[in-house]
Picture 1 (tube, rainbow, N blue to C red):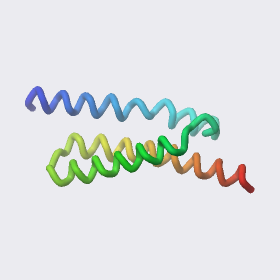
Picture 2: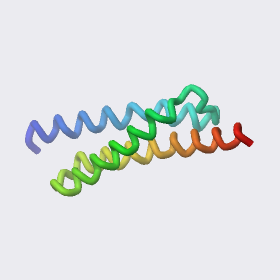
Picture 3: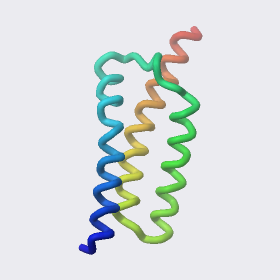
Picture 4: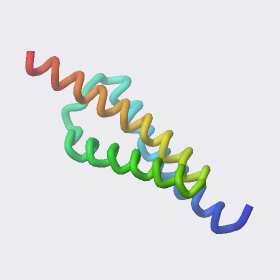
Length: 89
């Protein structure tokens, strides 16, 4: 593995791990009140576009980290939409 590839994997891993505390907190408390819906929607879209880009250029490290981040951010968005729906009922 080249040093530059290792740097990319490390950066992707750290970025992906950064969403775990928020996802775990939401899972435990079922509270997304302090979460910005707009920010997470744009971020999720960006992750999907990065995943497509990684697929096209055949960059597996980038693709894996973006897909895992997409799952975590998607979970956070799902919970946010669920809470918003409950509050509007």
